[in-house]
Length: 401
Length: 229
Image (cartoon, rainbow over all chains, first blue to last red; front, side, top):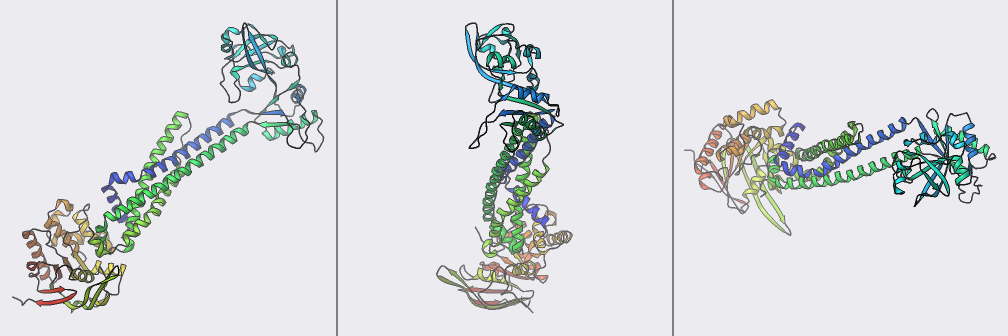
C-alpha cells in the first residue's frame, strides 16, 4: 500500500480519537515548545549581550596590586599615584586612567553619624564610570591639585543622615574627622552587586591621599582603552609601563594584576549557553516521556483495533502494510505534537522578545530539528506497537471480542 | 476442474500441555462454480477448516491445492497475497471500517493489491453496482441498514474477482427478509459462475446450496449433493 494511503489512514484514526490523541501528545508539545522557546530566547539573549559589547566605545581594564599567592614569593609592591601618573604620561595608547583610593570612614552631619565607603578619585572618574550628576557639580582637576575638601554624595546618603541628599548640597559634613563641603549629588545608579554607588561619597584623589587616608597607595587603577586596541594589546602596554615603574627584572613575575571586566560578559555568555543546554536536555527528557506516552496509547489502539487488523489481513494486507500503518500513525501523532509545540514555543519566544525588547528571529534550524526529533521519537516508540499489530494472527484477530 | 482440493487435512492446537485435534484428516474437492455449504456444531472443527480453506491459517498436515497451487506450505505474506487475489470474505458482522465510506471500504482490497487509484475507483464502483448500491457509495456504514452493509461487504469480497466467495454466517445478523435478499444475491452470483462456500449452522441457509458438507469431531460426517431440480 502506498505511503499516502497509510498517512490518510493514520490521520483518520487520529481524528477518530481526537481528544485522546491530543492528550497523548502533550508531553511532545511541551518538549518541542521548550526547545523552540529556549533556543530562540537563548539566541536573542546572546545577540543582546553581543550588541551591548560591540556598542561600548571602549572597554575598561582594572589594575590591582598583586597578592602573594601560594609558595611564590612576590613582593606585594603597592600601586601608587605615581604609577597612575606614569600610565597617563605613556603616549602609546590614548587611554584614560583613573586611580582610586577606597576606604571606610564615618560620616557625621549634625547629630547623625554613619559609616560610609569613601572613594578618592580623579575628575575623569565620573565619565569613565558612566555616572551622572543630579545636582551641583563634580570636583575639578584644580580641586584635586589643591586638595580641596569637597565631596559628592550618592543619592541615598542624605536619607541615611535623616535628611535629603539635595538638602545637603552646600552643607558641611565631617568625614573621618575632616570637614568637607558637599558640592554635588550623583544620580541614582542602583546597586551593582558588591557595591552600591548610591551609598558612597566621592572626594578628590589627592585630598583622599593627603588629608583622609594619609597614603599615596591606591587600591586600583582603571584604564579605559579605546576600541581600536584589543584588551590584549592594552594589557601588554600596561604591563610594560608598570614593570618599568616597579623595577621588575626580566623573568620576574608581575607584582600587580590586570583584570578585563569584559571577561565577565564572556562568562555570562557561557552561563547562558550552559543554561540553555540544560533546559534542552530537560526538553529532550520530556520528548522521551512523550514518546513513551505515545507508545502506550498505540498499544491501546492496537488492542482496540484487533478486529480491524484481522480484517485488513484477511483482505490481503501484508505484515509490512500493517507495520507501516501503525508506525506512520505514531509518527504522525508525534509530528502533530511537534508542530503544536513549535507554535506554542515560538509564541512564548515572541512574547519574551517583545517584553525584553530583543530581536525576534524565527529559529528555523530548531524548528526543523525538533520536528524531525519528534518524528524519530514516534518512529522509535511506534515500532513495538506496530510489530504487535503486524504479528497478529488474522484468524484469531478477526474473532477478537 | 477442482478449484479446491484438500487431502488428509489435520490441525492440532496445543493448549498448555494438552493437544487438541481440531481436524483429524479431511479430504474433499470443490469444483469451479459450485455453491457449497459447510455445516457443523460448534467445536466440530468447522471454524478451523474454514480458516484453513480461507488461507487464514495453515494445516498441521495434509495438502491443500487452490487452483492447482499448493498453499498449505505457504505462510505470512504469501498467504496474504492468496487471500487478496483468490478469496473474497463475507462475515457475519460485516467487518466494515466504520469511518470509511462504502466506496473506500470496497477499495481496500485493491489498495493492498497495488491497483492504481483510477482502477480502484472504477472496479469498486462496478462492484457496488453489482450489489445494487452504487447510489450509496459515499455513505458510511452507520448510515446504511444491516442488509446494505452486508451488500457493501459482498461488493468488497467480489472486487478483486476472487476464485472463491467465502461467506461465514452471512445472514446471522440479519432479519429473515433481508437475509433472504442476501441469499438471493448469492444465487445470482452463483448463476454468473461464482464459486461460493457458505459456512452456517442453520439448515434453511444450508438448504440454499447445491451441496452440504457436515463436519463433526474433526471429520467429514457426510457430503450430500442435492439433485438438480
